[in-house]
Amino acid sequence: MTDDRTSGAPARPERRGPGADWPSPVRWGAAALSVACLALLVVVIVYAVLLLFFRPSTEGYRDTALAAARQAATDFSTYDYRDADNDFTLLEKRATGKFREEVSQAKKQLVPLLKEGKATAQGTVREAAVTSASSERVQVIAVVDETVTNTAIPDGALRRYRFLLVMNKVDGRWLVSDLQQV
Image (cartoon, rainbow, N blue to C red):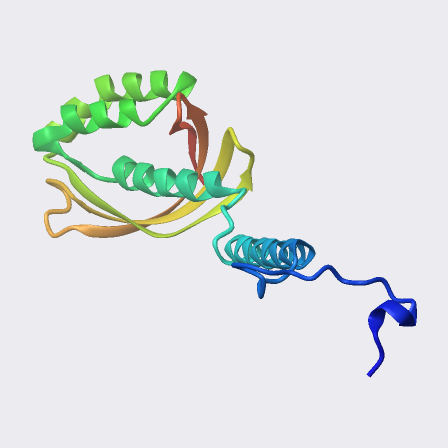
């Protein structure tokens, strides 16, 4: 066996006492660095998985605007002569701008006619889709089935409409700024 002191290799200091069998501080540093790198790798992998599977929609406004448009199309095609004033008040709350003024004017003219003809209608949105969108304005086309009854049609009649609704975001709510039959 050769003596390290004679072979030219640097001599290792002899360690004695408690902890003499522990790794050197250099090895502790390397171990700590390895653990830190492993922890960082785990964090990066978890973050990547969360981004991949739970990525927040950058176009989430489309979904909320579409839901608001579906509800508005249902409300605009549903009425009951016994509660027509409240039905139109709800429509006014779902409208904005010039269209809200049009709804208010229509209320004055239509409510007496609905009551006189004992008219009811139940609207159901069959399909709806966004045709164009930005974060503040969304256009939706909706296909609506409306079952109508009145004194002239006591057994009711089914009517199908296509509406183009323009939805504007006002104070965090999607409101109808225009509604056209197409």
